[in-house]
Image 1 (cartoon, rainbow, N blue to C red):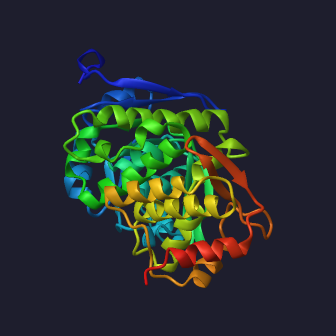
Image 2: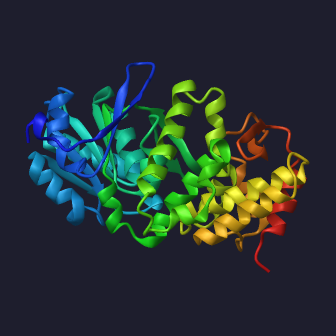
Length: 357
């Protein structure tokens, strides 16, 4: 495909400390990857990294179209580990990939995080392209350069910042997304709405038959872009994007990662709103509103885990300051605040109130 024959793609520029990169948004973006690689002068050997579920659906056709190698990893957060990273390193070495190689992360947040970490560290760094296929990855994980893997002690404890050469967002890949993964992605858009855009807090937006959803997708992407441009290394305001995530990461860990990230984020947003009310930051209406919305989307608002076990899981959260946990609370919609003075007893009481009887 020539550049002139490419489908019309919206281009959103992301300013990063080591150079800007674009996010291409539009139907057919995945089919134009070969042309986009040429456009960005990425002429080394391409390697597609995806998971075993997506390999036959998208990975094999893309690898064939690009004359690329294909590396398939196990599917699931429980495999976002250094062991899987080592497996990918071994395959890259067996393929003879040198520093001109281009690693294409094709999949959801787990693939993007892990493949991005590999790209950041293999031979001290090779080029990375993010090609998200899940809603969650499109609006969150593929943007901003945060990559990493989990340890048994906690989530994303090993990582780096690795900006992609570009991001290709193809909404047509959402047509094959399972309903549960659609709902999981919606949780991250609701988070964006709570932080910056009240108009996103409408359950009607998240019906799969919503013909105008592409606009919701664009707005959520722009919110993430605005944050990462203002704070590329998460030294300040970007931490607000962790709204609900201290709770979410604890749920994931305690569940043995049987809870999907988006499910845990949905619960975490409810818990963060209740905690905001518990410490006097907001009115009672806010947690009620958040809970209604999360339930309407079809995400959990309660869990079965022991509150004390959840609190223990939070102790290794990477956002802590020393022995103090940091929470993102809400004074209202679009009024977040970063707090490291939340009483542990308040957290325990909120978790107790949100436990299934």
